[in-house]
Image 1 (cartoon, rainbow, N blue to C red):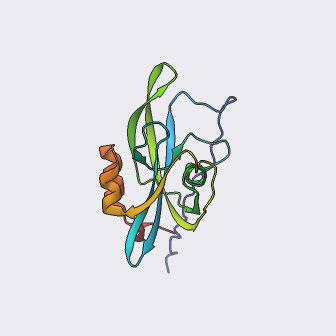
Image 2: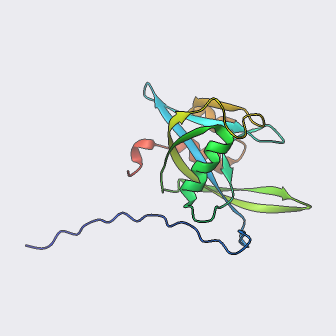
Image 3: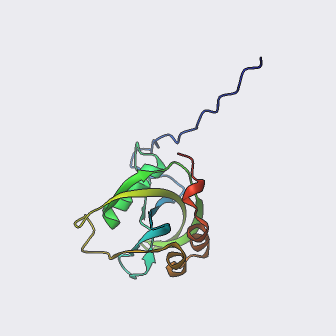
Length: 161
């Protein structure tokens, strides 16, 4: 009888950044924080610090953290939510960030985080607003077309656990 092939799930490895913690490529990791309430997928949005537009929590790579774990850390710092980060990139989008005097193109990879706890106090509470909205509405509130598509087509049932 032929041996059955066992499917081994590949896991994202933590990043090892060069001294100084920065790489030549500007990349960020975003958290698509979600919960399911009465069968409806809801997404957590936060406001950006300067323009106050609605965004997903996101930040720079972190030494010895996977991209999904770094996204989950940003979710805590920016939105006060914690949960299970999933090592499955949902997609990527780009934007231009004004770093010092040089506008810098940034690629953002989006990772889902299934939220299990919502805090009343968190590190950036005084700098941002947090809002839970149905997925369809969340997609419409976002500025970047690629990010809108990622949020609009997100299906938590299709994620591998």
